[in-house]
Length: 174
Image 1 (cartoon, helix red, strand yellow):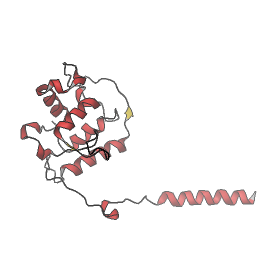
Image 2 (cartoon, helix red, strand yellow):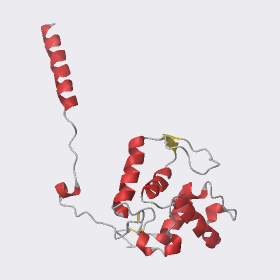
Image 3 (cartoon, rainbow, N blue to C red):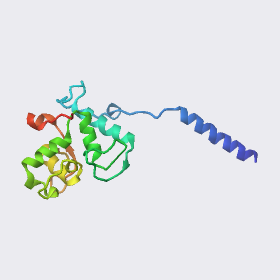
Image 4 (cartoon, rainbow, N blue to C red):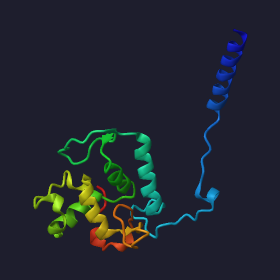
């Protein structure tokens, strides 16, 4: 019995001790990784686009929205719900871009490239569909992943550089 009480006391003490310690935050410098900065600060908040996009995605992940794949008449679901692609437009919003309007504009000008739209664009959902985002980023971003056997790009990993877009393609979030 004494051993059990001592063990419980030890576990509770250790738990209390660990709960007052804040988890260590690491930076790229801790691992010798160079932080790359975007030359663009679209929303003019003093933070480059790469850092804004990362902060927006991190904020959405920390918010832990619950899955809700329903159609939203206004296009945007509330911050506490969504699907996998919502982290992307929310990150873009943090950087000042309206991904919804940018995708919608590209679809209107290049309808045949977007088979998921089936010839009938819907701005309330098109920017939240994975296949549409793949087409958009294949056209407007830099692919970051190459197949090691063929050297060909593998879809799904992109770096968005606002300065690569024509000014008319950079649409602010309103």
